[in-house]
Length: 364
Image 1 (cartoon, rainbow, N blue to C red):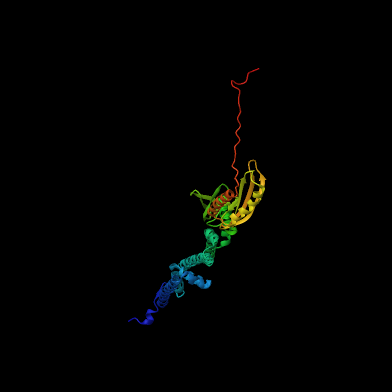
Image 2: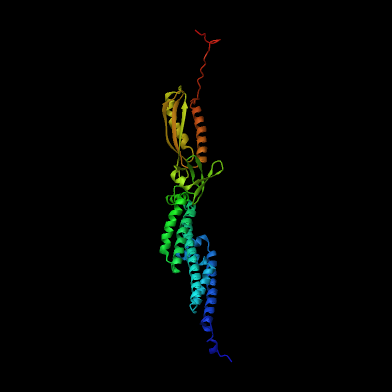
């Protein structure tokens, strides 16, 4: 009859049955407890409202986010690692287990790092009440650049943990990187230009731009190009490298819109009436909403009229507001000048009549 002491002396793959039992229990407990903890934290996080998230400290919210983003493969690797501490394997099997654990661990570290970068961007945008349009437009570029750096570091650290010499690899990557950079220099130029746009922030999503001969509203700032929606409706795609080299007029950040409005009156207008016109024009401008009067002067003697120049500001940059304001000013100015018996000068055309002799000129 087998006794307990005899059973515990049995070995499998060079390990006693007792050690295998401890390893199996450790594996099962770990693979049961950790997912329960993860599920509980993830459920609590999903129940938070946006206001609740802003009240928590960033470290607490980031910790819960990383726990919620932990993969099942990582939990399996943790359980496998803890269970393997009770056992001794042959060198080849030990090497396979080590490779699996190291690869899964550093893959999870990369996922955590990317989640942390996204968290930082979203946290900043949330605290700015969602008004950080510059950050929203450059998010793809930031994530792309951060992803390149994070996954390159993850790969190098994983190889180093596996005992692979990374110094020769870095030297080879340096030489290969030069060759690749020469072959894709246009793409790299656009990438560096997108980084320049992200850091310098000359415009953001929603801004109205004029770039060379093109005009439109920014819809998306990508890694390679920026997309505009033109006034006529079509989408305009411009390479970021071309934008950096061009002169960009950003109407979206215009605080005031300056308007210069010339008009002319007839030469038979009395002098005292001419002197009263600027004051009357000022009253008209100040009666409009969202305007600020600058000046109105009788500046020059035109060919057919006495020329006045009116300058005022519309305090809202929207072109529709400017057009409505200009129309109201035009109508009010026309009515006021008629009340003052002032005639606006109409453009005239000089017609020259040339009378030719009948039959043409005689030859001498």
